[in-house]
Length: 119
Length: 116
Image (cartoon, chains in turn purple, orange):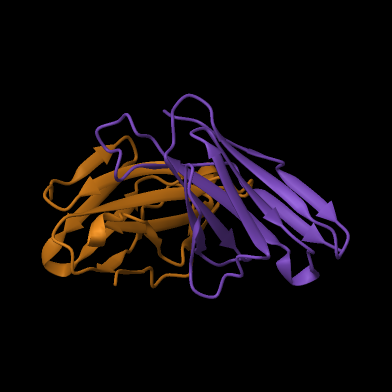
């Protein structure tokens, strides 16, 4: 199956600094990538939808200036958490859609996730 | 709007027991897709199955089976002869075509603990 690689797997940063998380589709082109946030023992909450070459669409309540998303190519999307605070500590997961499958409008492949801890 | 309900927060079983994870969904779309994902302690999401709204055939894959019933808007997942390695959080998800978006909505997840 298609592979989505997310990096880093975990990161610890100081409060006030910025952290960048990368999401790459390794063997397929992804016009659309999704970014999710997951709090402990909770479900995945969609943060934003990222389309290659255009601005991301953020879900209600998600601060676009705090969570910067860039989808510069068909294989890479990045999420930058700016001026991170302890409450931003969470598990962030990306997913990507493969243009070239019969289920291109439905199948989403997930990265391994990034555990962010802000101290 | 679409919604997925996984009423069971946590299930604890002993190895070799059969266990069923429930999933009930709501959608106004006539075309939609249902998924099950497994999230082991390491955190990554593992795709298990996808079902479209026009295919109500039940599916079996090894020890896993799925029962899709449109009449009750349910898509339940059964693990037969559970094993310790099945311990994980399982998510049911729905992806509908409103506005052509097909953005998945996830349930809260069911934590399955299989004891040796």
